[in-house]
Image (tube, rainbow, N blue to C red; front, side, top):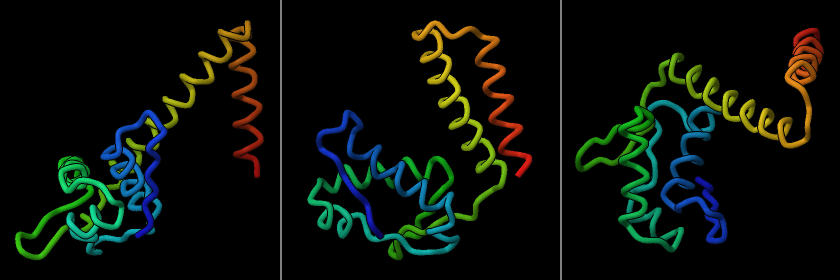
Length: 127
């Protein structure tokens, strides 16, 4: 499993790991029941603290992406389609908020933003 860590980004390392594993699960790269590397192995491979990888795995388990079998390891949990939809909606909201912020900073009106969104949606869904 490829995970890339950036020490220069403002994102904590555990969050980078969490985001990348979550992305791999949501994209289907990691499938239900697939075993993840052990916490110690991943920490060694990434040259980071075991505590950091443990935090990432715990966050993923709490969010319903992983489950742990004591003595066996961490595995990808069955995914509820509602979780995928909620995750997608969260990303859409985040991107739309960034677009609104950019529009405000650039003096673009709300009507122009709506028109642009409609043009983009019409072009995307008519394909």
